[in-house]
Amino acid sequence: MMQRSRLFQRRSTPVLLMLGAGMALLLAEIACSGLCFADRLHARQRTAQLVAQLGLSDIALFTEARYTRHPSQADLFTPFQDAPGSLEHFPSGSLLTPPPHIVPTTGRARQSPPSPSSNQPDNRE
Amino acid sequence: MSGWKQWLARQRYLLDFTVAAMWRRRWRNLLLLLVYALVVFLLASVLFYGSALRRDAAAVLSEAPEVTVQRIVLGRHALSPPDWPDRLRGIRGTRQVQGRLWGYYYDRANGANYTIMVPSHFSPEHSLKPGEAIVGAAVKRLRDERGLGWLHLLSPADNRLLRLKIVRTLPAESELVSADLILVSEKDFRRFFHLKPEDGFTDITLRVRNRNEIDTVAAKISTLLPQARVITRRDILRTYENLFSWREGVVLAMLAAALAAFAIFAFDKASGLSAEERREIGVLKALGWDTRDVMAMKLWEGMLVSLLAFLFGVVAAWLHIYMFDAGVLVPVLKGWSVLYPQVALTPHVDALQLAALAFMTIVPFTAATLVPVWKAAITDPDVVMR
Image (cartoon, rainbow over all chains, first blue to last red; front, side, top):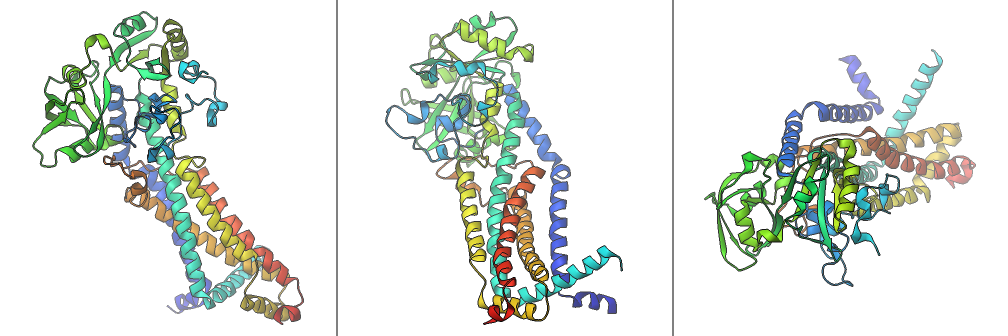
């Protein structure tokens, strides 16, 4: 008892304990990420099966516009609708960037081998 | 006492002194810790959400069609002619060639957009008779609140009402891909959109017997059908590789805001010490403290604040994203959407991402605390205290 009170007499002890607790929580979360969520992993596998059965090609994160609901299926002109000078105006358009296969000069597409779909007619001048 | 034990004891005493000094300015330090942890929390939340979403999207879309063929007219996606599936079946190595029928429907009743689709012929468990429908969980929530099991849609072609019996709801766990889906029979689909069989299909999907030949088959399709655009599964997966990555869109905006906040912190630290802090350093120097000791003390101070803020911020962000389903972030992403999937993401912590976040948050702040301290510590104590 005496020893414990002496231990806490040092100013740094509570701070070190806080650091230790924070570190332990972080490690617990990392370990839990792999171990505690088996049900979500199974759900993901079942969702992949559904994707195979229905032939789905995109995730339904943003449903407000065609090119954000199915970005992989969109062509480069879809965001600009029918008016050539109009600006892309759906809010979710600012959250999703165009897929690399329709804008081959952006992002990783520069390093990756050219896909046969990059000879698409909609990207030619 | 051996060398390292002595060093450890010395550091512990320095830490004791640092904590005591910080305690004298506790409200200022606590506020700093709180704001700092909040910035880390926001940044880590966006990074965790993005990486979990990318992983989940890649996992579920690994079963997406290997090849999708669209017809492009005037640079825009058009209906594929009804003879295309047969022509594509003629290419060696293709299998399960089928015309897909899907389209969008804007529901004037509630402003939501649905994806209406005819289930694949290769999925007998989703086969439907005319008048029947299978709907995504979000559609069910939105349109069948009373649980009566009927769906009424006004045809965009002739304003006639299509009455569908909801025979099943797709599992809520699959909302990431199926939230807005309404599956109907081919007859209902064609009637609803006034699409005659000779109009063809929305697009064509197919599988390739040998996965190594996907690119060859795609090249053959491009030659056979010059009007076609070919989208491979690799293209689909690559579309989501950059989703919410730190280089793009909202994450870049968040990152810029966080970096600006850190810059302000660092500027505040680097622009000078308070009179009290300068006097403290002067007193320590006058009492015989080394410049090295003063620097070590201030290094501890910076490290304690940034390390605690990092740990609190990251731990809270993990809980926020995986235990509370990103409650703070989802309203931002949802925006004006009427229909939004309720997604429970699969947890994953990327060590590299965590290390980058730690480097980005701990190092600049700690480094910024050292410059003014070094300046004060090398000055004559008498001058510093004046």
